[in-house]
Image (tube, rainbow, N blue to C red):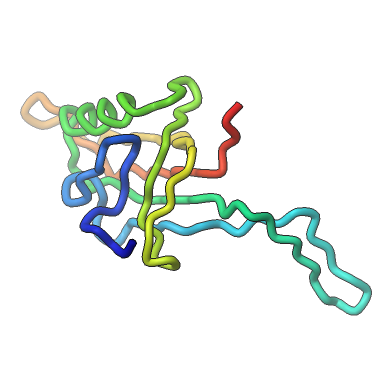
Length: 139
């Protein structure tokens, strides 16, 4: 299945990239993982790739989101957690390498909203960097 008009779904929530993904910041890939790589005496690297290619998606929100915008974004994400304390969620992301979508159990790593000002009674944020990391074990 090729690109279908969206980049990222967290559970059933399709992220509105025009509102919540800063232009030129969406960076998705399937991370090749290897088991016990080693280099022999002749300098050749021996790579034993595992089947799972762990999904990784990084993006930034546009600068200027208000506290209302950010709350809406986070509420929609939190509604789709399968384990809230670990920020685990099922993520489907468009991966350019495959011109297709990959779905995996992922977690959202720590992020740090930074306030750049308060105007008209609303908080305004700088861009916020998000990283979504797949290949999470379903314990």
